[in-house]
Length: 260
Image (cartoon, rainbow, N blue to C red; front, side, top):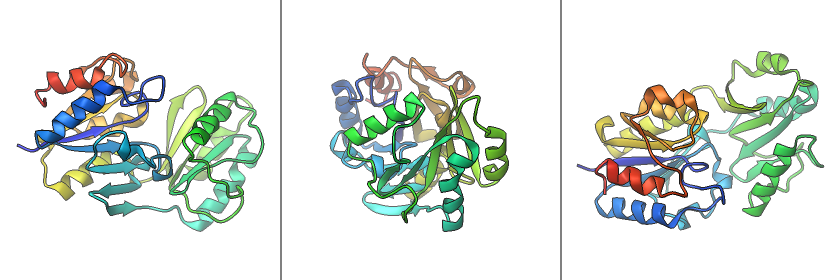
């Protein structure tokens, strides 16, 4: 029976060195040779996934927490935040004293200059390293599908949640970092839609992840496998825990599940 495999990227397919371990590539290739369909299911928008299909063999990419879905090269979902809402988001960083990363098809958009938050500077450096920083001015015209933000004690998160909470699921990723996804979209919704597109049942769906934004995917999937270092929120929905990416976690998981 054909199976569908859904993989988070950061902390799941990618190790601490931001590379796909050879064991993971070999395991995924072996799974596809046995008829499995392989999908990325990432919080990254498509602009941050350019060339990822060259790193591992894929049948599709589910990006931006379900706001973008491409299967066999065909676009099945492409949600863009309405312009009036985008304009409010552009002003929200200064209004609520946070730093915002606006994410879209052409990459990530950052406010000009260095952030007061080291983590935002680190994310920007990583994004620049993979060529996924948009060079359009922050307040110019471009499309976005979701956003992330960094806050601290000086930020007005209650005000921000009051303004944007009805439009976005605001996911607390810890240490003041929040991932904000349009209502109605999630990694879980992307997984279910992809199963419908491919005709594969839930009993033959397997997902692999590690962080809080994988929660909806774990809740939606019959076979959910967590990486060694993972958010405790995933535990109630986890079938079992595998090893770290660097220690052949993906290969071990696919073998344990009988997929390869």
